[in-house]
Image 1 (cartoon, rainbow, N blue to C red):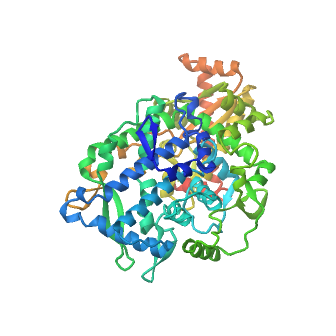
Image 2: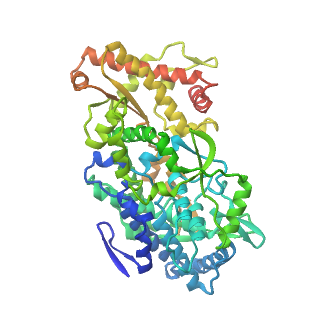
Image 3: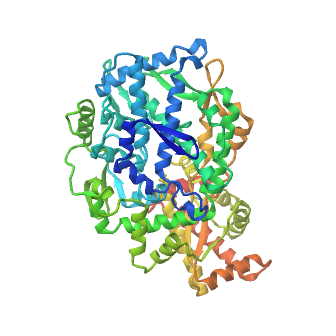
Length: 610
């Protein structure tokens, strides 16, 4: 047994076998992958990496599993639930993965080993700067329909599962590598999840199996991942947010049994009890503040956008693309590939097929991820150092020069049109004045108030208006068209200004509405019905959905800043009006391009005329 000192959890315990696991290149690479991307450029002390976060997630996951399997913490009417869970778990382990267990204690030990191993590998798929560069990767490479069993997973989760599949890792002898892959994949929503095996002649979905229950500890609404990053990022940033009563939070966790449509087979969820409502309020409020004031700080959004754009340029380079994907061509059908995956999971002698299959814009053939690109025998790993090296060696023509200066040297002359809600509200008032009286969609007159309302809703709310919406493509397309319109301002003023539009997509409201807690009588109740504070928080949409930045010479940026500070300055009034008018033109253009961009135009039209 080894002890690791940690500023958040004091001591984290790992076994000798887990120490060997942690010392593999797969996990050691995370020491050089920033937990919060370029946020450190705004909060200098926020220097945490995915490595220490991984250790923290393993620590909290262990505490949660120990709590939910402790019979003494349950009321008399629910004290049998942990035993029932262990019996179902034993059946799932045997039928899905061919892992036999003799008693509850052995089942508990196997589950703990699988969970801790999965926690250590949960973030190994993160590329440099974590989520900040993930969108760049997704913009160049695409998931194929041939990917056999992860249709709803996030990019870093799929990449991580594939790296685990390709790597010879020293897993504990009591489990199999297939168990890790199943657990890494079981976070797929129930309606998309595919079954992993047959139990009593019935197909079992991943999300409804014991693996779905364990997965919720790593990636659920009340999970170890969020608990650790709230405490860790709040402490390391120095912002004063993120503190909550972790022991009370963990001690409140319970197993809740529900019957599934699959012949009454029990499914187990993990929920907190209503006794810990004050801690849950604190947790969600701290999460709200951390997102609003740290993760979505206006300057963080600016640097994040530079990371996305520079990363897209780097990944699109042919020499990078050829290294990232191997030249294998997949010939099997999706169904055949999936069936081979299921068979291989229960037979350790069979080779597992690829978990994710990629394509890129350089060709239409499907390729496998190349592990050697992450861990080359010679050269640097795919980590933050690699990305920094790519920035330093890039041709400094065009947009890459300001990206390099900002991200490597933090040298930037940037002007933000607004930094907080009151400034954005003032801008929207100007937008209202710029909406023409004859703005119509499908013979419906669109009022200035309706345009303003559209510009304040979270992007993900467009899903309520149309199933055709593609949030990520829609945001990027809208930003690109708006930037093209803003460039006319710089041309008209003969200035050096270069516009950068950032569309945000984060909404705490959607995450609160479906949250439940366990009442004293064993029934469930919505957390918003239990807490007036959280009900009020659920009505908020306080995130700015849009940022507009301008890069330029020191003289041009200084003139803009001075003009904004001077009351009734005509230069600022004209500039603000031009930026607002460009936004109105963008809305009108996007509403008219139904055939070109239906994934954006259709929901936008419905939102404006409903």
